[in-house]
Image (cartoon, rainbow, N blue to C red; front, side, top):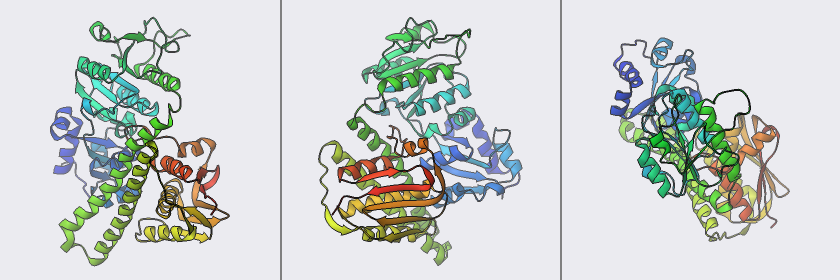
Length: 470
């Protein structure tokens, strides 16, 4: 454990609070459990620091399994590295995740453009709101604050890793690119002639957001096709930048509707799948790298444990890729399953065996019997995905698959679903890697084969797969 703030690695890490050093090394600091988890899932973490109290956090084990350098430090060192008053005991050094302007997803529906936002907390909150409102990207243009400022990263609450972020471009270049992508350009301004409820924000829109104190300069406002304001009914003179941006983006989301079409939703799911696949591949790469570089220094038990972990991640990656291909086939009406009369417990037994290969996963128990008419490989994929989801949504103990009367029920103790939680399970993914790709597409693929997937309110993670009759 590192106990001195004069340690070379600690000194080098602390310097990442300065923008020049961040830009030079193309790495930045991520503080707190949830943001660190999102950074790890995105495959961006190079080093994870933790205090002794946080050493048992699952994230520490996940990082080590993914080949990330894990470093234990004292509370005093953690306080030196972080900028929060009460650190959570976890801090990551992550690689830059911004993308070039040209890599914004094709046919975007909503893109906020920060033109001169200088407050890091506001900028991070805009990023978080953009993620929640289903924006396709966020652009930090002109003289806006650095997206990797520790306060910005913290205020984004992990959303920095959910959607494409562009930084360091001139406003006019960003506007030209977005207009070329088919977006209308609207300037957010308190004195705009039309309010957001009367503006057509259902069209693909880029929102230009100005400085907290003086708004948008005239030359920037002149680049827009028009302007829009948030109506104020009380005595407040104006709204905070982050609040106004959030209201405009959610009004745009409201006007666009929950899902413009099944085709668009499938495109979003396919885009979002990259995040899930990257997570499994990162774990595989980490295991393989550690085995290749440290084979002679690892004992036989450790090598055996790591290889078993790799087999589970390989099955997860294969399942995701198969679902991705089937999703593309659904979109082009080319999905052609090959149903067979089969015993459901055989497919469930395969799932049980896969997860039993590694001690990093809870036990999967399958009981009962049923006959159905489905494609065997695709049934295995559905069962694997739902068992995997039960591990995430449940809190403790084994995952139980109970097969009876043409259904398979998945339960695990430790989770309670309210109506909002049930709905959240199957929310359509959004471009940039957000949403639960596996569950959403699993439901679509099940329906395409005459089955159905549901989640019920109550205690314990419970998914139900209803199977077609044989």
